[in-house]
Image 1: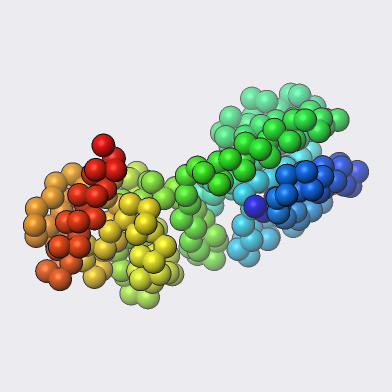
Image 2: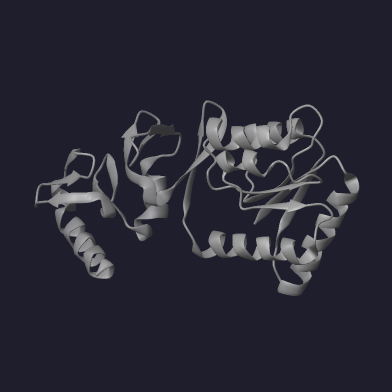
Length: 239
C-alpha cells in the first residue's frame, strides 16, 4: 500500500513517517511512504502517474493549499479511490472538506492512535473492499470503481470504458489484458470486442445480451456455451 505525506512542517512529516515505520514493524506490513513539502510537488507526481492509496494532506500549505489539491484529485482527475486524511492546526476548515469526501480530519498535534485507526481502515478497504480500474487519460492517471464499469469495448489501440453514470473513458490497455485480470471478478468476454460486467445484464438470450444502459451486444457463436456457463455460475453465486 502506498502512502504520501504532504506537509511543509518537516517535524510532522518525520512523526508520521516514524509511526508508519512502527506500524510496519508491529503488523508485518509493507506500507511505502513518500514525503512532499508542497502541494505542487505532489501534484506533479500524481500527474506523472504515481499512485497513492492514502494521503496525509496538510491544509495550510504555501501557494496551493491542501483543499485545492484535494478538489483537483476528486473533480479534475476523478481519483475517487484515494483516501484523503486532512491535517491542520486550525479547526475552521471542516465545512470546506465536504466536497472532497475525506476519510478523516485531524487537528495538530496529531495523535498516534488516530493515525493507526486511519491506516487500519484504509488497509481493510484496499485489501478486501472495492477493486479499482486505473487508467491514463490525457496524460493523467484516473480511477473508477470496478463495480461501476458496465462494460469494456475494444477501440483502436485501447478500450472504451463505459460506466453506469454514463461516463465513457478511454484506456490504453488491450481487451485481452483486462480479460486476464477481471474475468474472475464478475466480467465475461461474450464477444471478441466486449468484456461485460455480468451484474449489469438486464436481458439474456442465446445470441445476445442487453445491458442496463440499453446496449445490446451480440454473443459470439464460439463463446455462447462458455458465456452461458459463466452467467449461470454468476447468478448462482449472487443468490
